[in-house]
Image (cartoon, rainbow, N blue to C red; front, side, top):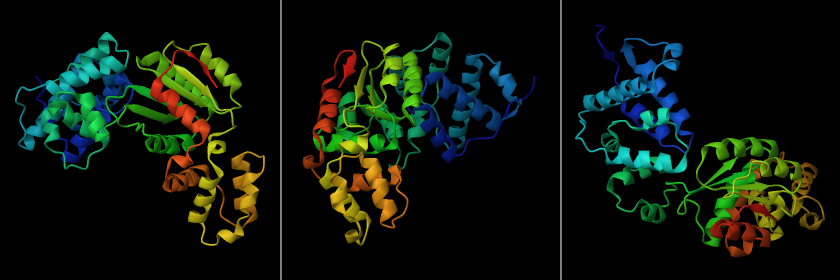
Length: 334
């Protein structure tokens, strides 16, 4: 029989693997990718090619990957103690959020020494790893999420078109008093209205939790595509004011421009009050006043810094947050 030879994962690699296994991603896809990467990178003998792993039984993949992870921890003098509470809670969580096949269950039913991995934490981990640590110690993980703003366990997903919504909506929600991370709300920027439909189809096919879709005013065709497959628990909201930038109050935009540019006198602020899409106005301001090119992502981050109080919440932003907080039955929301 060929002798097994393993190149141990480093501390950094162990933390990266744990991070990748606990992100909000399709269960089967993330486990297969992480396990195969570990096997191809750290199992020296026997050596497997990618095609061989693609044809390997899920149970075998799990056993090889967990052995490599646990051996790597033992090299660091961290031995398993038979406590697999974290594993059970991860299993329960993934099954409550994602639709899991019998094959994928095999990947989840592992004996990775997660408790040992948490001993490598420094205190500056990303939210999903902080949540992983909380799974060992917290009797009430929902209460712990609320207290520590952990995001996990995720209970609702928002799909939006662009980076502006992804950047600003959580900040507006925080000012409003409905913190996304405390309430388990995960927001995804799809990268355009057509991609929103694609993302919704993929998530609706795989998720057991509600999805809230936020569309620009011009996305009526995309709305129809979503409604064709819309689940009872999901919501779609169509903006009444064009794009998300059109929801931003003028005083907030003025404050942002003053913050961004030393010589704000170059900017004709009265130009902001025209009956035009805010993005078009901002593009003109940047172009005609000799400023650098207007970029939505950069401007969203500047706005984020300048959100100060509930006065920066427009009526429509408040309406969206009210719906998110309350939850509604399936329908088109306007």
